[in-house]
Image (cartoon, rainbow, N blue to C red):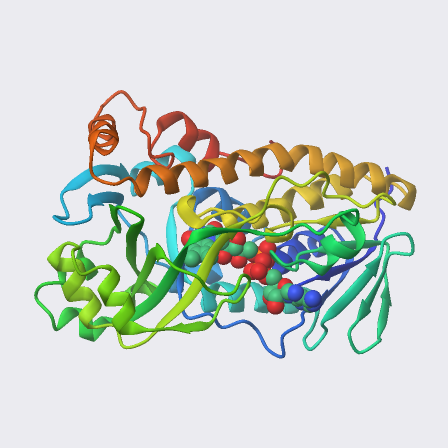
Length: 411
Ligand SMILES: Cc1cc2nc3c(=O)[nH]c(=O)nc-3n(C[C@H](O)[C@H](O)[C@H](O)COP(=O)(O)OP(=O)(O)OC[C@H]3O[C@@H](n4cnc5c(N)ncnc54)[C@H](O)[C@@H]3O)c2cc1C
C-alpha cells in the first residue's frame, strides 16, 4: 500500500493537540496547529503522567527530553482527611514500572506543554498562536478564525478543550453540548523546595516521594513534588464555583485554608506556606452521540470529546492516547476517500474506553468524598482488603491493569 500524506489542521494547541500533531507528523502528514492564545499556556500546576501516556511519548521518541523534569513517586497513598492515617497504598515504583514497563511520573504542566511544543517544532509542525477558531465547515473541511482567516485541510482535528468550537459548529450541531459542572472546584498551589525543607513538619513530603491524597467529606487534598523535586504541588478539591474552561482564575488563600481547617495537621501546616492559589471548576462532558462529523472529515479528541473529572488523573493521558490511535488509523489509508472510515474506526476504538474512564473518575469522586458514617467505614474496610479489589478505581487490580497497561497504538 502506498503511504499517503494528508493536510491536517489541529484546532487547539494544548497537551492533547500538540501530542496528536506529533503522532500525525511522524506518520508523514503535514500538520498545522491553530491555538487561540497569544502564547503557550503556562499553567502553574502539576500533572500526573501515568504509564499509558508515558508509553506513547516513548514510542514518539521524545520521552528522554522529559527525564530531567519529572519526579517518580513510590506510591499513591490515600489517607484519612483528619488524622492522615493510611487508608490505601498503591505501589508505583518499582512495582508499576515493572508491571507496565513504563513508570508513573509527576511533572509541571508548563514543562509538559513546553517539551511537547519543542518536539513538535523540531519535527516541522507549524504552531500558530493568536489563531482563535470561530467555526469549522465540516463539508469543506475549512476552519474560520475570528479574524476571518480561512484554512483548508483534508482533516480537521478538534482538540480545543471542554468548550470546543469544533464540536459545536461541525460535529454535534443539533444541540449545544453543555459541560457538566460538578459541585466542586480545585484550588491549585505550589510551594518551593527550600520552603518545604525549612519546615520540619512537612520536610518529609519532599524526601519520601509519594502522591498523597487526604480524603474527606466533599473535599480532598492531593499533593506531590514536581519539577524533579524543585517544588511541591497541591490540588485541593472543595465545594465551590468558578468559570468552566478557565485554567488561571485566582482564588482566595484564606477561603482555601478555611476549607481544610479540620484536616491532618500536616496538611494545615503545608497550607500555611501557600501564598497564592489558582481556582478551577471541575467539570466533565456528557456522553457525546459522535466524535466524527457527517462528512467524515472532522474529528474530536481530548477534552473536546471526553472531558473528565480529575479523580483518576487521566484527562491528558487519554488525550495523548487519542493522538496515537488516530495516527495509527490514518496510517492505514491509501487515499483521501478512506479518511471517513479511518476517523470512524478511531472513534470506535476510543469512545468506550474514555467513557469508562469518565465513569471511573466520577465513581472515585463519590467514594473519596463520603461523609463519615457507615458507608465510609465500609469503604475504608474494603480498601484494606488484600484480594486486589479496591473501591478506589486507581488501586483496583483489574481496573488499574486495563487503565495503565493500555497500548494506544494497538489495543
Ligand atoms: C484540577 C485538574 C487536575 C488534572 N490533573 C490531571 C492529571 O494529573 N493527569 C492527567 O492526565 N490529566 C489531568 N487533568 C486533565 C487534563 O488537564 C485535561 O484533560 C487536558 O489538559 C486536556 O487536554 P486537551 O488538549 O484536550 O484540552 P486543553 O488542555 O483544554 O487544551 C485546549 C487548547 O485549545 C485552545 N483553544 C480553546 N478554544 C479555542 C479556540 N476557539 N480556538 C483556538 N484554540 C482554542 C486552548 O487555548 C488550549 O490551548 C486535570 C484537570 C484538572 C481540571
